[in-house]
Image (cartoon, rainbow, N blue to C red):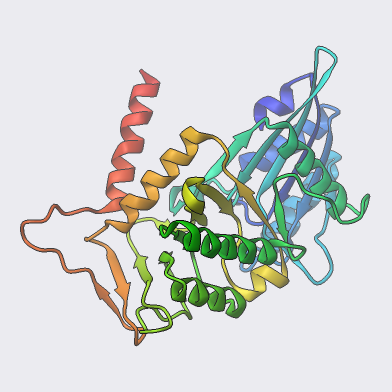
Length: 335
């Protein structure tokens, strides 16, 4: 963001902000960009729980710097995490988009696990432009290339993906869904997962918090497994995988499968189309499901029990593995 603010070829920066730190480098970069003459638009959520006063203060700071601040949409809470940078280079317009599962907050970034995608994909860039135009009131409901949003169509997309997985399973017999989120409470999606289980689709759910679905019930959810991981870092990423008859589909989102997220919030669901990133995400999901140190499995009665590990079996603590992997990557990159 700081580089974009100083780049003379950058024309515009647009961003949604839900929760930022008290002395946020993001806020400083946005203010600098506006002062440097760039068109800067920020959609800020004033009703972010516990951060209302902080958000009001930095929103005023942005306005003073010349940023066009949009104070949310009536009746909806802006929970999406998206940044669009528009750049002019050699007579061409370039769009760079960041989409994430977590907040643009340097404080919580030290404590939460999240994922983000930085892309120059042209169609995702067009979707991002349409997203901001729609929220700014400059356009009607967009026709998306890749994105799905709440409250417009995100639940419909999830329902479609589950139904497609059921159909693929009936044709191939190897249906599988892996979904990772903070909470699962949305009744329509829970019922769809039950239908998929009854059709034979294998479903693994990684739900850190509230889960209203009950796994392992004969005739209802015997093909569903639910685990929760509570460890050093707060599990915060929302990841969705569908085997789709071997044509695997991967998605990330700002939204949990909760009714409030489907109907009362502005959320974004976006696909991962890079094979290399898909492979990395699948490895992360599979290793998380193998955790036998911090994972607890939900039983049919709703009780949670730590996964029993035979003495001869290798201990796997997924967060520790990811932490060490990231540390090695950081050290090698610095060298």
